[in-house]
Length: 154
Image (cartoon, rainbow, N blue to C red):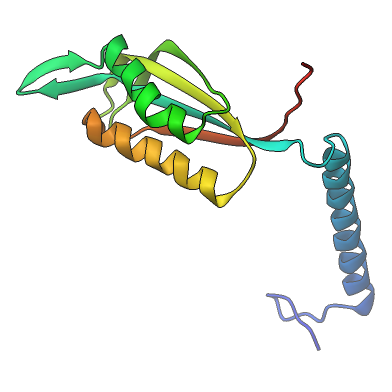
């Protein structure tokens, strides 16, 4: 006999109600998922990657920013060969709160790339992040990923 935490017996009726409720919830979730998938024709669901790159760094104890020229060179030599089909980037002003609670503001670059899902593209994204952190002495690069419908009306 099944019991709950108070050691009172659970009736067969109660189990049926819970099972029916669970099935209804599963059907509802499944319907939402299939509805979302049908809104995007097969082959057009891509990963949208947005990376946020800070520019503050220290060279020989002196504060410097990643310059626009350094950023363009990084994009040309690192990003473009990995995603030659296209990408978008822009300058931004960003801020973040450190572990000590202090808000730090800095110039930033935002890079956005849409690509088909796949292991090769994931490896390429990791390469971009790793190289930027190493080349420009950064602790982190913020990465935001989503699955989106992509179409070209060209």
